[in-house]
Amino acid sequence: MNGWMSLAYRWLRRPRSRGQAAAEFSLLLLGLLVSGSAFLAFAPDLLAIFTVYVAGFYLVLGYPLG
Image (cartoon, rainbow, N blue to C red; front, side, top):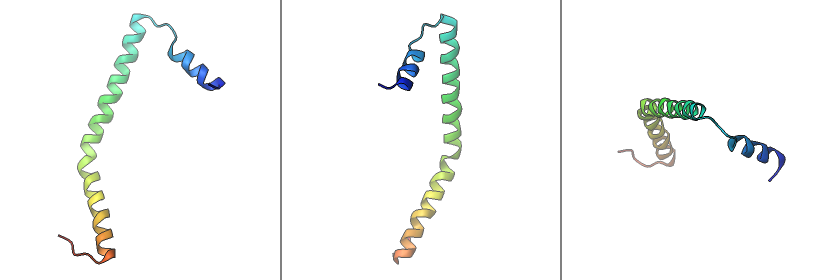
């Protein structure tokens, strides 16, 4: 383990008060919920883009669509 890894590991393993642990957990949960809702909001658009991308390969290779 190099120096940077041991520093990060020591920082993660540091002692925390109950309030600090609750605050960190709340912020991590909030970030997870925001990123999850953003993914769900844009998932249909991403699927449509991927569908157009795959359809382009079919057209280039000469396969019929549908």
